[in-house]
Image (cartoon, helix red, strand yellow):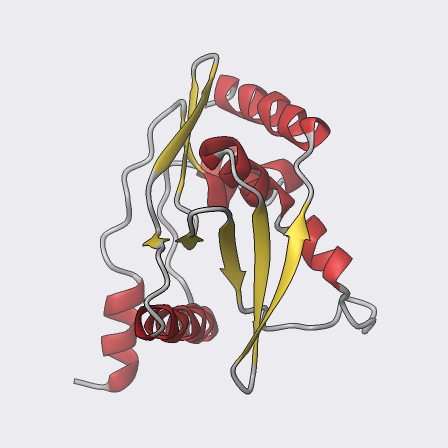
Length: 181
């Protein structure tokens, strides 16, 4: 069997079932930005070869950071599952690393520039991932830090500021989206 097929099988394994009223925190930004539409919500999509490499690279960085925490005997939970509920909506969130006093959501951005070629700043990254981090904050009641992996191995932390405005944006968008399913 070819390595590409092995990687494809691993990343594109059986998708999780989607249900009306149930969402994953990682989908919320795509819903709000209009990338994920109600007509496509129940259809599984395959990740292409480039995306497979990106997914696996991020998972590899995360797995290595987990080894660093284990080696140093740091108390943490890896991807604990929580739910945020309001009205008839349930959002599942799994922060990458939950420590006793804070949460770390890790990302390994492939592109470090925007569509104009401008270098992305910490503020850009915080804005890009704010919906997911807001939900992690609401679920855990802890401060959330965005951890950006860089190559060679490096992890830079940026504090996320919880926001009622962002949470309200999530609630309005998901109620509207859910009503169209």
